[in-house]
Image 1 (cartoon, helix red, strand yellow):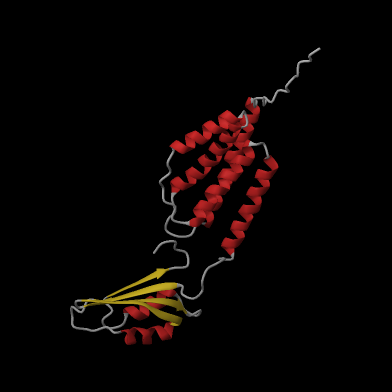
Image 2 (image 1 turned 90 degrees about the horizontal axis):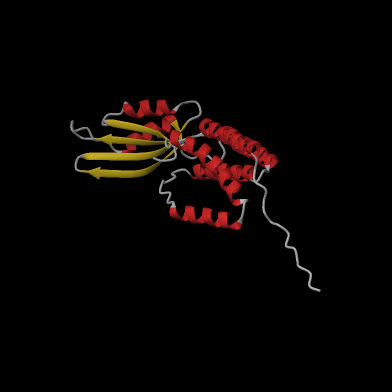
Length: 229
């Protein structure tokens, strides 16, 4: 007598409307918190409002992807095929932006698999770390806080040499170094890395150099919080 073997069903029960709403709503709330943290701790020149929108949307889409993938292997393969057709050509200038993209992806994946505690604790822990590191100004080099660029066009016959500029810098800075010197025609351009004294400010450095004879154009750039220069 042959007994038929019964193969257990591997079908995954569909999510209810309430569960879907909980996952998407929770993901939206957590990604919104992440976007606020990004806005409050961002430093540099590459801030983009559209990137904040993208953080929230990417998180919710990753949660939706996990809800689709949980149904079966065919759906998961279909998702991979769709991603293979999509090309993201946006250049991310700040590596921290990539970390935020990964942040919301992880939260979306956790919410999509109904790991609510993991998503909540990860958001709180990583968000707290970001706030603390930003508060401590973690990783900033104290060697040179500013970049000073002095240009002499020599239209009035007044020359500008490095010795004159460096004499003035010794009075208003703790340290400095010549980064580049460029002479083209009658134009002289000197660029210095400068760390102002604790008792003074970057503005005082700018004013001291501006008063020099031959300093036709003086520019000062803050390098501590700028991503691109």
